[in-house]
Image (cartoon, rainbow, N blue to C red; front, top):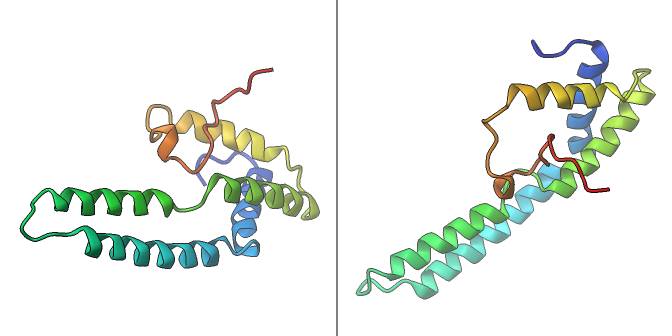
Length: 131
């Protein structure tokens, strides 16, 4: 909140987060996580051989893949929450363009601290698409 300059920026952030709730992203994520954990567990059981130490690497790889699949929210979820956030922010009487300035502020605040793009659910705010 210290980084926010206007009520509109706060409204945009809240609208985005409410968008996740309205779209039931957490419920979808939980169901996907349960399925992935079950499949990962089955893969580990099938491939594990107590007499072969290298089979532990297979279990570790299966766990890593499961973790990648279960990243918090997908980029599609984030984009959907953004779309809903714009709508909710506007309907609440705020200028939804304040979300842009908030993203710029967040990009400045996180300089050099972003995870690798592949591991991030949020698109890189510095990314400029080719024209």
